[in-house]
Figure (tube, rainbow, N blue to C red):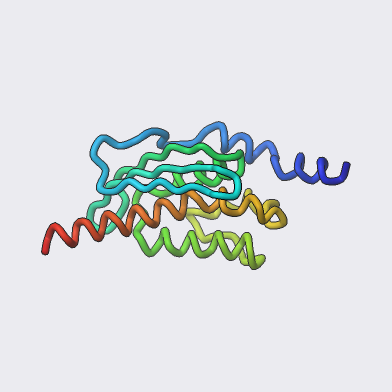
Length: 153
């Protein structure tokens, strides 16, 4: 019974509210990069489309098929990703991973809303789903920059 109580606490009203209101859902008509990531453990998937200009994300879209925790992470990332640089996305990814796995601090603003996922630290089987959107965003950013560099060469 305690395990059920812990799961109920994990899926707080705030997490469920975020999961129900994910920004930038869908796809972009002509993205600079599109990346799809899947968690083999739970089957969650996230696709990210983005366009970058002057080293910043200017357009972003996501298709999220994940548990409520993965959806909540996607909501926080989606709400704060426009204007972010590759370095900022990488730092947020690293900080989120450290928060989950190493009891690290909450990611810096503007991704500090990911603190809602602190209760998931003890649920390592959920970490991959939580990480999907930020990892796909970083991979898409790197892919878009590589494509841009190659077209200039």
